[in-house]
Length: 376
Image 1 (cartoon, rainbow, N blue to C red):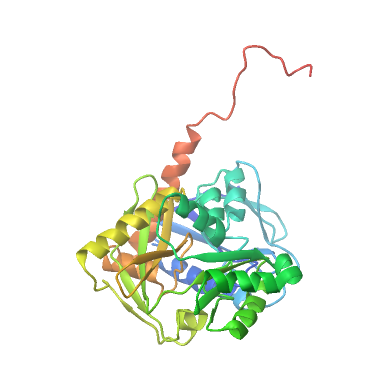
Image 2: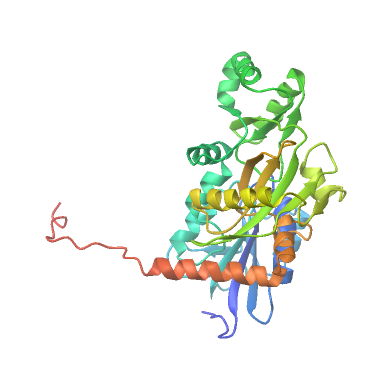
């Protein structure tokens, strides 16, 4: 068995995944790997293909970016508290101890609590929110319901299952047009990076947008648009005592901050810090922290707001594994707040280790007064 160097932590960086955000994950993970201090960390890249194969080693990123079909996994994490990763790529099976896992997996099967729940079984510390917060935040409908219970201001919405749409699209369309006013936004409930999101100005665009969203998810959410909104983002970090970064504003190159505006055309702008009254900044910061705590977030999250023309901040969503590309807002917001990218990664890893240490103190067994169960 190969152990980590006494001076370095072995960090397994997970990327790729079975998601429409696969490509974004590759770019985010590349940035994370490049900015992990080589004096402190030994990086073990683990790529997950679109078909769910786990590939470890230095060539994993190149392999996934090439789109080459992989028939056999070369890495395996055991669902037991061993902290071991079995590398099956060579002739002999080699077990490597992993000190911490850094998931850079956007979207379903990575950001939705699936991987987080699996990592709980392994007992290995991992960066970011736990499985509950990850699952709730990934599902836009469930997230809205929790935040509504906390009295946090959000835009009105309608949601439905794709099966309901197939049976009674007319009724759902009438409900949407009764409760909401155009323009409106149509989104897959469980996806990020603006994949599958459309802005509809009339019924024809609404029907097309719903067909697009159903392509990515079984659950669809339709949200009221905000008149002439400013898109404000803040970065939150921490476990039980989170803190918020400076606020930033996105000036999208397209009509809204869609996938192309975020990653492709390189024309969107960001303004950090965002220019707004102190009272508005304070309100947004306090709301971001309140939402983070209400959703049981730990580690990190990016919190997005829509600021209306009359100064009302509507919470749009929390993203538990925000983009980590060179142009992503989460690291840029912290850099503007005085924490450089490598420092940010170090703090996130520290938070993961701290949470794991606290959990290890908890009892996992209970001794009853009598051995009643042995013969039952």
